[in-house]
Amino acid sequence: MTDQTSLWLFGYGSLIWRPAIPYAERLPARATGYERRFYQGSTDHRGVPEAPGRVVTLVPSAAAVCGGVAYRVAPADVAAVLHTLDVREQGGYTRLELSVQVLGDAPREVSALTYVAAPDNPNWLGPAPVAAIARQIAGSRGPSGKNREYLVRLAAALRELAVDDPHVFELEREVAGHEDL
Image (cartoon, rainbow, N blue to C red; front, side):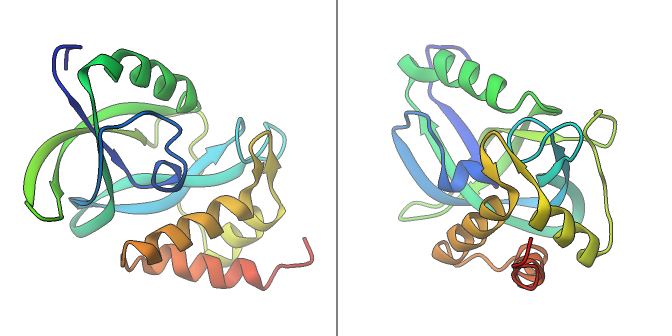
């Protein structure tokens, strides 16, 4: 991925609804073999070190398909976009190159870069009961705002893309029951 070629990015979390990067194309896409999960702690955006929020990462799962968006970044913007995303995703995320199916008028497979948080990073929170994750999301806030907003905006963006994500939608329903926080 040099600055001489376009770069494809796969967004499955906040990049869907808040890319904050220049891009030449934005298309629905999906990654096979991964599921979206609220397993990553956020101490720099949707929580603080003393009270981390929860944000999504991709977790390998052979039968899963994770819907999101693919962004094609023009060659002239690649270096700046990578710098921006490296800063934005510094809270435990690393770059991963994966094959994604770009949908639309001309469906095709592309190699795309995405950012994932693995269990060995210091902000990893991992699986927990839905009710516990929902309570944590409902009560967390960080420099980028309420963790609840992240969840609600992600759920809305997935609906716009016609992506069914039972994990996200179940958490959204559960968090709605914690309006008092």
